[in-house]
Image 1: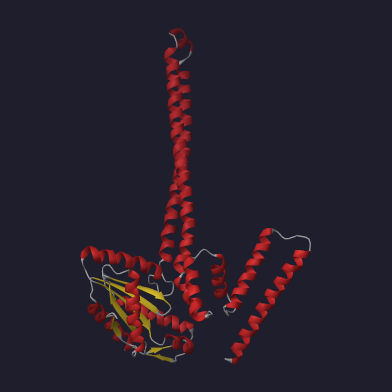
Image 2: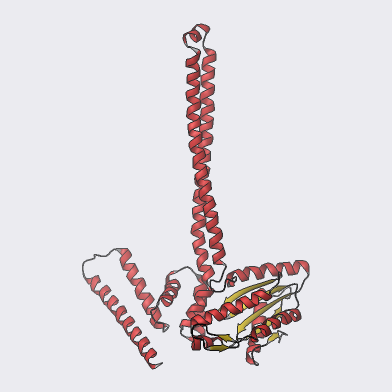
Length: 379
């Protein structure tokens, strides 16, 4: 532990040194002839801000921490900024665990920004398709007008003039106009076919990106962003159908010990196991999601809190009967248990309040022995 702290101290010292060097360079270059571009100067200032932020919140300059700092200072992700601010208000600093939790929670929102670029590309393709259609339509009208003009001209010729123009020449003139139109129509058709193909590919990419944006990459479950949409839709159905609706928060007991003792890879496998076990017990009217860290959330439609407690207790008991082993080294991990809190949805009550009630029941379950499911009863 002492060596780790010393290593972190060295990292921070190097970070301070790098920041001071950059600051010194910036000051020296202010006095020297201006050689760098405005963009380079802005970029340097952004790096200085990131280094300063990492030092302020006591984070090492590693990729995930740098990513969070950059998004916090330069990105447009309001959810991430809010999550960071809440952690700082509560703890006064950030840890690597907090960073991982924040990045995981905000992953969906960050990916949504990428979807906007795909949507813009789709709109550009659509606009191009409409231009092609418009051009093709105008050319069709021009063809019809040219053909009609030629026919009218031929009708107006007197018999002597018609005799001077062989029928073959007349048909050749009409054929030339028709051939030009066919070539133009073929080009328009090929252009539309290409646009249609690109739009089909774009649709596949959008569907794939949307799916990824709503999935937790580790467990494959819907993420927090997707859950909020599912929960909102479920509350609307519950009110329309006059059916009960329950929400449950589930938190793995002593999960930090698993990470500290067996490493994060073993911890990830435990998360995947719990997710798979919970998913195996959910029915068609249940919506399971990873809420962040070692916490999961379930919406149970047309289910009372007593019924929800019974279902979740069955999962808890099934999981607790297993004795896990770290497959990397054969060391026993032991039993994995979880605590859960269940709360009812009450029409007229804000969705956020329902979640707070379930979280309060979870907190009570954690503080009164763990490995149990409790129902929120108010107060």
